[in-house]
Image (tube, rainbow over the protein chains, first blue to last red):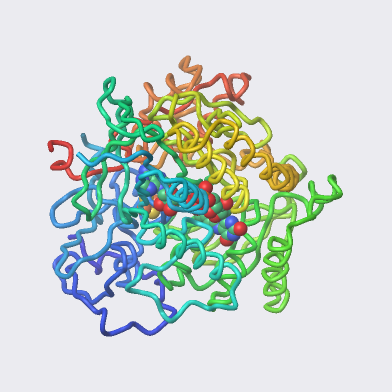
Length: 112
Length: 481
Ligand SMILES: Cc1cc2nc3c(=O)[nH]c(=O)nc-3n(C[C@H](O)[C@H](O)[C@H](O)COP(=O)(O)OP(=O)(O)OC[C@H]3O[C@@H](n4cnc5c(N)ncnc54)[C@H](O)[C@@H]3O)c2cc1C
Ligand code: FES
C-alpha cells in the first residue's frame, strides 16, 4: 500500500560524491532494507531511495515532501520507529531505523 | 537541573560570536543548536560523518569558520548540537542561583526544554540570547505545493550540507541575493539551471546610496563569483521576471514564467513555459520568530519588507527583561551584522551579570558603531531589492494552496472573508488555516496579504499566527518527564 510501486516515475535526487563505505548503514523504509550513510537525515535517505513523495493526503491528492529542508515547514513529516509526525529533514538516521512514508494515506492532523 | 548564566539558542554567526565574547568575560553558558554542527546558515557545515575532505583553507569563509570554532573550543563552551529548544518558561522568583561580580545572587531566569541526543532535557538560565536566524519566505503561486518545488535554502542545505543534488533541470526564482548563490551552486554541482529569475529590476536600490559597497569586499567577491559561474555556464539571469505557475500531476514537470512590472504584476504576454523537474523559489527571508513570539516579546512591523521583527534596545535586549536577540532574527542583516549584534548582546549581558561595569560596556560597544553603520547602509539597499511587491500575489487563483498543512486554498480563504472574517483569527476559525503542524510559519505572510488586500486594511492590523509549545513535534515521552 505504501511502497515504491505507487510512487510515480520521478527524477530522483543524486549523490554528488561516491558514498563513503565505512559509513554505510541499513535502514528500513516501508519494510524494505535500504542502505544509507551515517550522518544523513531521514529525508536524504528517502530522496536517495527514489521517493520523492513522503506523504499523500487523500483529500485533494496533495503530495507532501521536503520543502524548506530546515525544520520549519513541517511538510516532510513521516513515521519513524512507530512515532508519527517526525520531521524527516531534521532527524538523523540510525542503523535499523524503521521509516514509514504515508503514501496514499490520510495525514494525522487531517483526521484529528 | 543544570544551571547556566546564559543560554544561547542558535549557533550561527550571531550565537557563536556572542558565546566567545561571553566566555571571555567569565560567563558560564550553553549554546543550543538544532543542526549537527555549529555555523548556522552562513557557514553551513556537513555533519561530521559526511565530511568529504579537509576543509579548503584557501576558502575565506571556511577560514573564518575555523577561527570561530577554534575560539569556541578554546573557551570550553558547552555546545548542545542536534538539539532543539521546544519550550521556555519563566521561572518563579529567585529560583536560579548565580554570581554577580563574585557575590551570590538569585535570579528569576528561564527553564528551557530541549530535545536532542544529550542527557540534558532541560536547562536553567539567567539570561537568554535568541539567535535563531531566518528562513526562506515562501511565495505562493498555482502549483507551488507540488513536490519538486523547494526553497533555495532547502536546496542549499541538501547541496552544501549533504552533497545531494535535488534535481536535474532546475528553475531558480523569487528575489534576493540567495538566488544567485543557489543558482551558481546547483550549476557547479552539475544541474542544468534553465534560468535565475529575480522579481526586482536590475538597478533597484543598487546605486541609491553611493557608498553602499564600501567595506563590502566579501559580498562583492561572492556576487562576482556567482555571477561569473552563471555567465560561464550561459545561464540567463533575468531581472524583472517571476514564476507564474508550476505544472505537473504528481510532481513538477514544467514552469510558466515571464516578466513582471515594478509592482510584481505579471505581464501575461511575456509568458514562457520551460520543462523542469525542480523549482527553487522564495522571496527573500522571514525572521524566525517562533521563540520571540513564544516568550511574548513585542514585535514591530516593517512595511518595506512586509515582516515583523522583535523590538530591541541598543543593548539588544527585547521588551521581555533578560531576553536578548542577535542576528537575522532582528531583520536579516547578513553575517557581519549578525556578528556585530552577537558581540553587542554578549557585552550587554556581561554588564548585567556584573562582569563588566556600565562604563566598560559602553566603551566596548562604541567601536562597533562604524561596523553597524556600514552594514545598515548595505541592508537599506538590499531592502529596496527585497521590498514586498504586492503584484506578485496576482498569480494566485482560487485553487492555489495557501496553507499546505491544513490544505486550505485561496478560494476558501476568500470565502471566509466573504463570510465576515476580518483578520487571521477569523480566517483560522473558519478554515483551520495555520492550525497545522507548522503553526502558521509558512502561511502567515500569504494569508495576511490576502486578508489585508480583500478587506482593505493595513497588514499590521490583520493579526499574526500564534506559536505555542511544543515549538516542534516532539516525542510524547519528553513532555511527560
Ligand atoms: C537558508 C539560508 C541560506 C543563506 N545563505 C547565505 C549565503 O549563501 N550567503 C550569505 O552571505 N548569506 C546567506 N544567508 C544569510 C546568512 O546566513 C545569515 O545572515 C547569517 O547566517 C545569520 O546568522 P544568525 O546567527 O543570525 O543565524 P543562522 O546562521 O541562521 O543560524 C541560526 C541557528 O539557530 C538554530 N535554531 C533556530 N531555532 C532553534 C531552536 N528552536 N532550537 C535550537 N536551535 C535553533 C538553527 O539550527 C541555526 O543553526 C542565508 C540565510 C538563510 C536562512
Ligand atoms: S522540509 Fe520543512 S520541515 Fe522538513
